[in-house]
Image 1: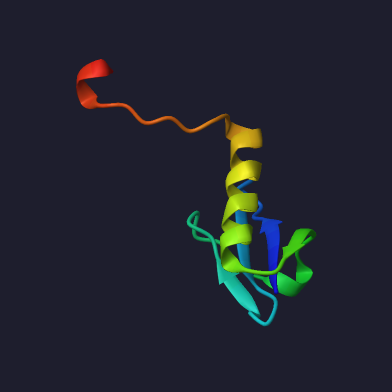
Image 2: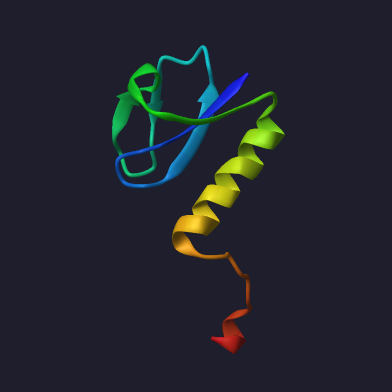
Length: 70
């Protein structure tokens, strides 16, 4: 079982329920048990999709382009 939660910086993250600590890309390390759980999902693929949805809600949709179009 995986849990989905947010860091203080706003980034959505996921980890297994058994994991005690998690480090965000912003550098903050925190205890996963003390975070507010947004969702619980069965597998890592579903957790990844949920994180992607949450990130798109907060920061808008991701799009890819080539350097010549910028």
